[in-house]
Length: 243
Image 1 (cartoon, rainbow, N blue to C red):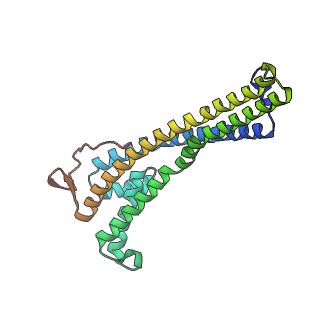
Image 2: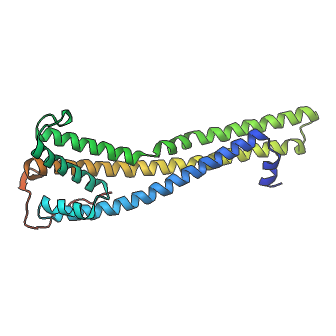
Image 3: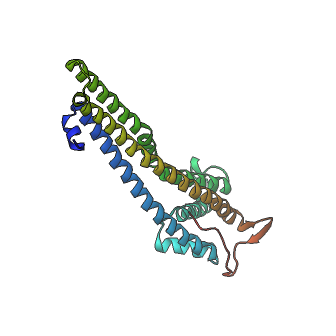
């Protein structure tokens, strides 16, 4: 008796639970692969942009680069919106309620808004992974209970707990438990991996946002306890790469 035999003799409830577990597994693997590839591409593009940014001679060069090649990573997205906010407020002032306050206030709100958008984008889909990892074992456990229930019915109807009466239902129960664990474990591991990667990227994005705000509001960069001018004449400056 193989796996197909146990599936063939299961009822509608057992087959429905199996279909749910298969669907949950497909969704979790899809999210893990898709977000893993997206994470890798985002990391490479962020590294390229930060390398250009820290070696640019001025913010005008950064602005021209963004205008020419567009925005393809969180750091370029943040930089583009922050520069646009500064230029817009300098040109039009507080023309609307959302632009109320000084230039630094408007710039701070814009940076915070972009950071929130990027965090939401990074966390998209993780709730589904967490839900699958938390519920898949219980779906398999329900299938286990259902299989044991069938085994008890078979024993009651036959009047004897012989192996041929209980092997099918018990085998179905064990299979459902194993499938539930097989679905939950990759989902939990993928969720933890993606969560940590997002946390690292978010921390670096926050640090970059602080220096970008300093650039735009003061025209200077904070380096330790010293304040250095923004324009460095093309001098090379080392900064941590993005995650």
